[in-house]
Image 1: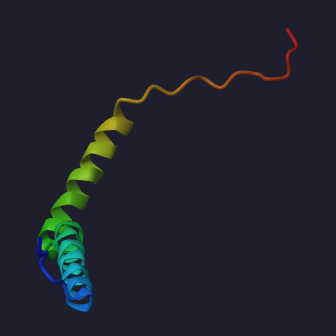
Image 2: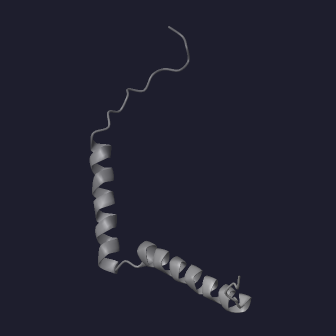
Image 3: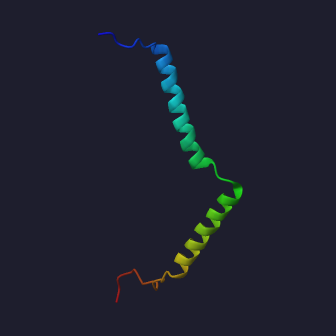
Length: 68
């Protein structure tokens, strides 16, 4: 009935390291893009917004006074 003896300080440090590594991996995915990739994404988003705006139908302004 002997259990493994765990040094809590080492356990906490190991847990903190793994948490920092997990956060670093997430940051690499989120922020780790090259300038060319960022420019490409920006250009694609601008093009999509422009295409969406071109298809928009503008309503004629109406007289809001309520008089006929």
